[in-house]
Image (cartoon, rainbow, N blue to C red; front, side):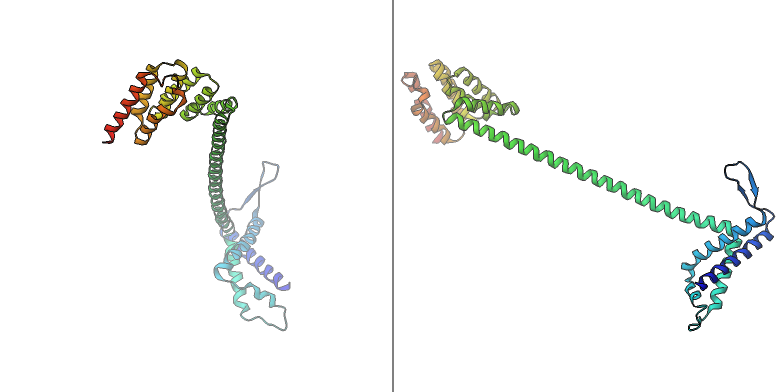
Length: 304
């Protein structure tokens, strides 16, 4: 503890000497403003002394890491068991640095404070940039999570809708066409251009004997997917059940046969002319038989 007071005393003395030397070398003096007043007061000799002491402390503090001053040696000054070695050089360093700091007091203080402010500003700027980057990263993460969440919700909604469509189709073919129609219509509220769903809705209308609506659904399916032969074939079935005339049926069947690409699909169309109950009312017509034979001949030519 006594060593600390000794060091403090040396710094004060060095600051006094530095401030006094500065007083002798300059004709001017410092001024300070009285708090809560517009008046400035000349500090005179005491102003130089106070600034000198402050400059001495600042200069010594800044010099310790630069010159590697071992100020801990002052702890041993009053220890009888452990007499310090090389104390005089350290004392001289302290006095010299303190006097220089006292002489340059205001410049030392302002210089160090400027350096500290610049360092502080650099750290603040670095932290600000880090904070901005962190904010951007968080925003990107939030946006990504939101997008993933949105995509997941869309997939879930799509899965629910598809389940609704499958349920409706199952009901249509399991003897509950009215319930199936409602399910499919609910699905179509969100997917109005799904040709398959519209085609299945037409099948539901066929089973409740609303053939005009079934034909309307078949035409809508063809409009959306004209390359699907099944939709043309369904239209032919509904026309046969409603009109009992072969002309319109022949046109739809001919289109289905032309659109069908695979040989198996064409054979299925020809076989259905004999087995499908929807053509029961026109199957015995001579022109129907002639048409069937024409399709068989066309398939034979294409296969050869």
